[in-house]
Image 1 (cartoon, helix red, strand yellow):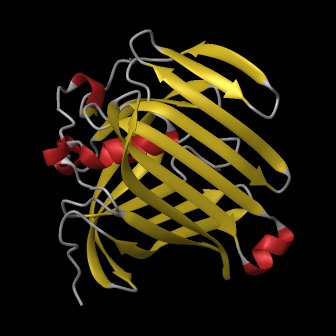
Image 2 (cartoon, rainbow, N blue to C red):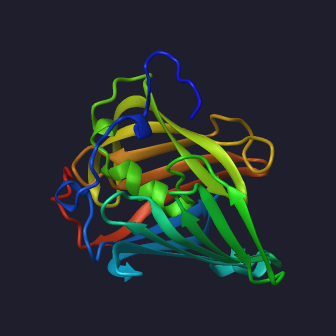
Length: 257
């Protein structure tokens, strides 16, 4: 784990148990997000959660699906499937599946995480290739990180300017993911006015995003910590992702009608 500047916290260094009674979510939670690219509805993304077991270990199984629609699908077909199985006790991923088709660019990967030995066991089904890569301590996949950050308590007690960081493993690479808190903001949505906590997720620039701080995230300022809106400046424009539908939340969703 890297060293952290003043005002920045490492979640991995804080011994916060990932007990089910503290979860911001529960079995059966479901979200639908609508992604806009300019004036077009570019795609819809769904994310659902259910209880499961792997090798006798209780896990949450998060299933993500995204696809372009309408004109966007004609111009650039996208159909992505993501699965993450993460421990109900620790929040750490045990198994991650990524099966994507983005304009003809395809990947079909399965990753098994061995956190005790800090190894990711990667099965590239498209290339019929198996290899192992050393991962950083307590590494998360793309989906498990989303739920882990929602669940830990200290993301709700941050002051503006403070940030939290976790280790992530994606596309066979280790990197540090940092979430910086900007402050509170009320958003006008299709559901009504929602008080949100505003964040900047720090991402790698150059490949997709314009700058390191080109993504802004708004999360409901309640116990659910629901993603309400995400806006990103990319190399060829900007994208906005809004919460469209939801069900089976664990806590009341605070909305001002």
